[in-house]
Image 1 (cartoon, one colour):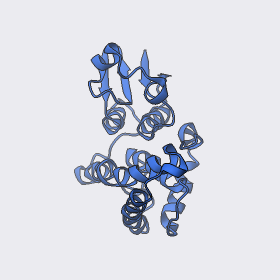
Image 2 (tube, one colour; image 1 turned 90 degrees about the vertical axis):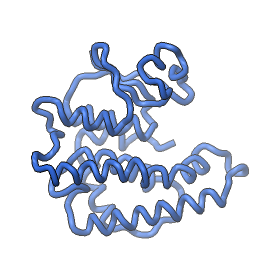
Image 3 (cartoon, one colour; image 1 turned 180 degrees about the horizontal axis):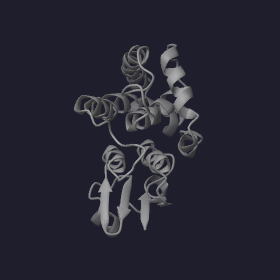
Length: 206
């Protein structure tokens, strides 16, 4: 039995869902985190001591951290998400996974939280603007990069597109002013057409 723990509107859970769907592996998902609770229960903490989502559980094996789950899925025998054999090409995938986790998504966190979770009259507008400016810098970097490549890590779809794509989905659908990013839009339209993408890109970001 393979089970994914986490709520469907979590951007990190969405990465794991998309990866599982691309892999074609059977799994069940159990809501956890946010209003669903579960993550503070001893049984869950025994699997994932961080108390966050997602957690992938397989026959007594538990794995947390969404990008670690993507890497794990890419290493399964015959995986359609297999990393490139060339060390440099594989390192490019890792590079963009790390950028998403340490720069792009953290940069938009305050804007997302304030705009999507905090009532309008209680929002910290300065925090929203600072977050928007930071994320725009990241979006500009990504747009310049995508001007010269079909996908995030090269000419082929990879787990880097899943990770960055989930973050881009959130950014492109927030009610904020954004500069035009034609290369991001072109790339996002391509990856959004993938059958597996519909499992997450049709979910409202709220």
